[in-house]
Image (cartoon, rainbow, N blue to C red; front, side, top):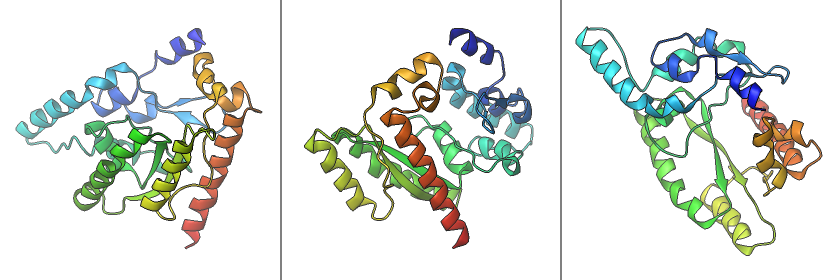
Length: 223
C-alpha cells in the first residue's frame, strides 16, 4: 500500500490545477478500477484558499479575469463530457474549496452520520446551498441524503434517520451504510472496500447505494 501511494503522489493534483500550475487533463490519473479515473488531492490543498485569494488580487490588478470561486468549475467544464459521473469529495467544512465544489456541481449528495451532533450542521449546509444557488449556481439542488455509520443496536441511530427523513421528505436514500469494520480497515490497505472484502456488509451496502444512485439519476433524466 505504501509504494502505491508513493507512486500516486508523484503526480500533480487538484491543488496545482486550481492555482494554474498544471492542467486538469495532465493531473487526472487512471486507477486499477475499470472506467474509474481520479483527480488526486494532497495535504497542500489545505492552503489553497489563501493562494486563490492572492491570485485573484494579482490578476485583477493586471486587468485579467479571475474568480476564485469558479476555478473548479472552469477546469471541470474542460473534461465534463468525457465522464458519465463526476464526484467531488468535499471536506466537512464550508470554506472556499467547498464553495468551488458547490459552484461546479449539478447536485449535492449529503452523507450524514447517524449521530446526534451530525444533525447540527445540516441546517447550515442547506443555507449555504441556498446562497450558492442564488448567487452562483441557479441549477444546484440536493440530489439526496445518505445515512452512514448506522448502528442498528441503538435507538439514537433510528431516531436520527427518522429526524432526517422528516427534514428532507423524499430525499433520503433507502440504502443505509452501516458501521462496519471492513470499511474502516480498507483505506489502510490502499483499497476500496469492494476490493478489500467484497462480501462484507459495508461493501454490499455501497454497491446497493451505487445502484440506487444510477437508478435515481436515470429516472430524473427521463423526467
